Amino acid sequence: MQTLQDRFGRRFSYLRLSLTEVCNFRCQYCLPDGFRGSKRGFLTVPEIRRLVRAFAELGTFKVRLTGGEPTVRRDFTEILSAVAGTPGVERVAMTTNAYRLAKNAAAWKSAGLNAVNISLDALEGESFRRITGDRRFAQVMDGIDQALAVGFDSVKINTVLLRELNDDQLPAFFDFVRNRPISLRFIELMQTGDNQPYFQRHHVPGSRIREKLEAGGWQPVRRGPAAGPAVEYAHPDHAGHIGLIAPYAAHFCDGCNRLRVTARGALKLCLFGNGSTDLRALLQDDDQTEALKSHIMKALFEKPPTHFLHQGRVGDTPHLASTGG
Image (tube, rainbow, N blue to C red; front, side, top):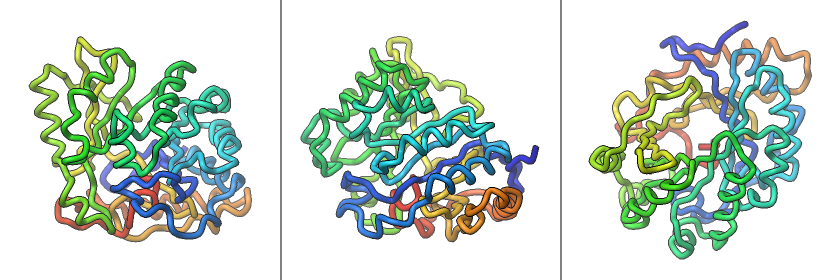
């Protein structure tokens, strides 16, 4: 079997596949004015099936469905079944704002979903509304409870750390995982093409969280083979973990193991890179698999060793919903 390996020896077993650029929330750091653009032209189910099959034949065994908000697609369950049923795919996850999770968690688990990451930037309704532009806080919390109840392999919370908006709530976030077997990961706010003033006002260095964790007796947890970029910490008095995703930290990209495909079929080698490789023309027929795999392997040779966020170079990503985060 061919394997996805770049010229720096990094292996790519993890595909982040965006299903749509549309999101029904208006998070301040991503889409404060809501989605603007065409809501059509996203990859179809047959195209997705061919894409995932090619990646699986190249050694990818974990697929994360992202957006936008992936569950705004009416055919989400069909997509989920197609991905989960692909030979070689061992783990299917999704990142969601959880507005549909409470009602659908059991059905999605039956369709093959193994893990969910839920965006949650506040632990009370008014702060949630201020950050996300949405009032469905209770609905999201119900979704978290239901995700735990149906028994997904993994339930994680993604919290973007924001100065003056939620950074004063760290004790409450730590307490949230005291009795819940959840990994709550603080994500350092990242600069994108259209959020520079917001970034400058609200960015909190990941080192601040690391210092608080270490001072509070939290200890790093060993990473698994398909783990994402989070460094996770455990505490003997907590059922859950706290994670930290700090893209501005030194050597953040050394262990990169994922590639991204946008909702319109473009391969992005780096979330904060420039340019992409169109794969869609090679997703139109089952007989194109070998050509598609060769195209992916050739493109991977151009993957840079690191992003350049620390130099203020954010690439051509206008906002995270455009590429699936």
